[in-house]
Amino acid sequence: MISPIIATVLFPPVGLVSLINAVRYRRSVREGRPAVAQALRARDWATYAFGAALTTLIVVAIAAFLLLNDHAVLRAYFDLDALGKSIPDIAGAFVSNLTVSITAEIGIVIWGLVLAVGRSLPGRAYLPIRLIVVGYIDLFRALPGLLTILLIGFGLPATGIGFFATMSLYQTGAIALIVVYGAYVAEIFRGAIDAIPSGQLAAARSLGFGYFGAMRHIILPQAIRSTLPSLLNWYISVLKDTSLLSVLGLVEGLTTARIQVTFMSNLSPLVGVSLCFLVVTLPLSRLTDYIIMRSARKRQGKA
Image 1 (cartoon, rainbow, N blue to C red):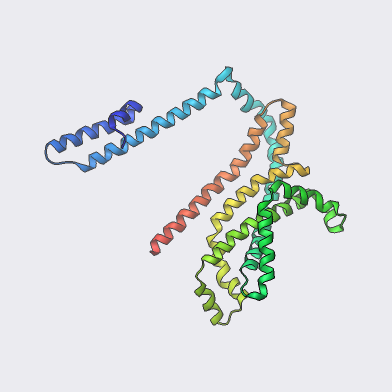
Image 2 (cartoon, one colour):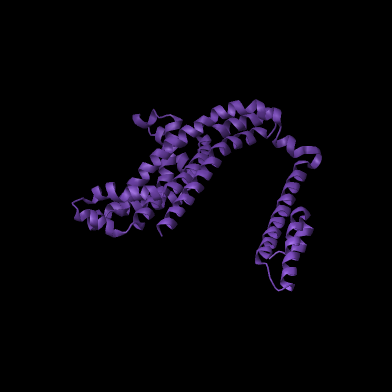
C-alpha cells in the first residue's frame, strides 16, 4: 500500500486527504476504537494521489515533447491550417474505407460461418471437406495479408476471365479481405460452436431436426450471439486494413493523406486520416466493452 506521506509528497492536494484519514485512524487505534473505514479511505486516497501524480507526469512529458525545438513537433504534426485544408478531401476518400470494410465484413461473416460449419461436419463421409477447410484456414492464416491482397487484387483481373476482369478495385479489395479474414473468423465461430453443449445438438436431432436444421435453428444463433464482441473487434481490424488496399491503386483515406503530405510538406494530413479512423474505431471499441460487460452481468445474474 502507498504510504499517505509518500502520497502527500507525490500529489499534495489529494495526498493530504489520505494523510488526514491515516492520522485519524491511528488516533482511533490509540483510543481503543479503531475506525476501519478511515484506514480504507486513507488507502484509497493514497492510491488516487499516486494515479493523479502519474497522470500529471505523463501530461507534462507529452507537453514538453510537443514544445521541443520551438514547437517543431506541433508544426510537423498538428498544423491547424494544413489540417483544415486536407480534412475535407481525406474524409471524402475515407468513405471508400468504410464502404469496402462494411461490404467485406458482411462477406467475412458469411464465409466464416460456411467454413466453420464445414469444419464441424461430423462423420467420415465429410472428412475430405473438413481437410479442405482446415487446409484453407491454415494457409491464409499463415500468409501475410498484404501478400494475399496483391495476389488477388492483381491476379484475378490479370486472368482475363470476364467475371474477374471487369471487377473494380473496390470489389477485388473486398474479396481479398474476405479471403484473409474469413479464415480467422471461421475459427472464432468454430470455437463458439464447440462451446455449446453437445446435448443440445442431440436433443434437436431427437426432435426430428437434421444436422443442418439443428445447426441453423439451434446452434448457430447461439454461436453468433456469443461471438458478437469478437466480430466487432475484427471489424475494427478490417477497417484499419483497408488502408493496405492502397497498393492496388484504390484511392482511400490514407492514399489521399499521403498525397496531401507531398503537396504541403507537412505530416498533419496523416494526423487527419488518423482522426477519421479514431472517430469510427473508438465508439466501436466502447460498444464492444459494453456488450462484454452486459454479457458478464447476465451470466452473474443467472448464477
